[in-house]
Image 1 (cartoon, rainbow, N blue to C red):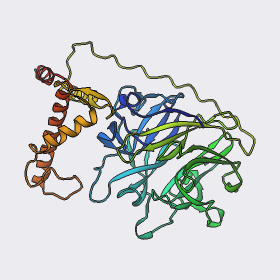
Image 2: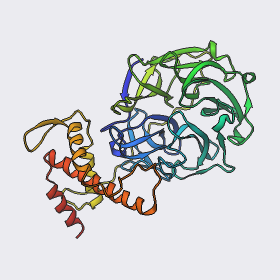
Image 3: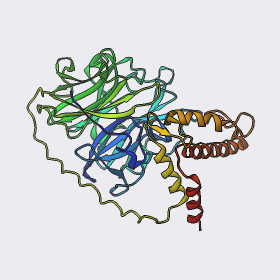
Length: 438
């Protein structure tokens, strides 16, 4: 069970403006000849800093290296990741939307996502669709599985699915409380996700313990189900020949253990996984240090899983060719004020343990510098009546304007103060901004 490499983080996904992320659900995208990886709560900077999105897609090559983000027709190697559809986080109804799985059936991509009011409080699971992974819309008719007040089946909260022949097989469990077994259904591919889901295994769970995130994939003519095993605190995968076989008797591999990789979850199967090959199975596992959000990332694990049935040769996937980057402007070229501001933020978005020396000659960590500056700058930029308030709290129209202004002033003050503490000449940067404005 080697821990191959992190697939998100500083200098890994910095180029797509996503240094902190979890999940990483993968599908092969034939149109772009690359892996589309869908992430849950993700942030522009390490330790959950900057812009918050979920879900977002980043494109990867066969070696699990970033190649860019999807555009309407291809891949932008230098683009910023984009949230699938617009919504405000921490709104009065819910806090975020977390993807469960996505799939291409016919001409459409479909994603199932949990609308959550805080982790473990899923209100509904909804389906959206897209023709190009870029523009997304609600399914028509809109598929929304209600979970409030114990409505609906308890296993239709967190879902995974794949097509086997003419059917899409669906596996599901409870939400992020991770206290439910796993059930299964199927529906004709031509009717997914709208048709009536046929209950399998006589309505009984296929696995009866408690589980978290799931990932079901049809690989080389065999079925593989990966899951977070809550009771054993590990990531595991089971394979059987057919999706309706007895999963309790399938071949199993435990590919990541919480004792060695603490606070783990996720476990999504790479499209380049191979059965029967030494370390041929590739899984993306999330790790979140909830005490300080460092790390909050996704790491690839490899392990060996032996098939229960004969292998069916698949058409080899072409090796992704990285897009040609757009030429960078020559040194000394003009930059917009926003580009300069983002450049400064990126320069400062390093791990909190990095040592810096202040102009006064004091050696402190970046985390300590941020803490000092936060408390120093917090007071002068309070507008009135305790603002800025938390965005999840109710406020009047004037209050929202004041909040926005206060947050903007406060953010700029903190960044400038932090830059000065690190020895960055803010005055020269400000001069460049003025010059770029003409």
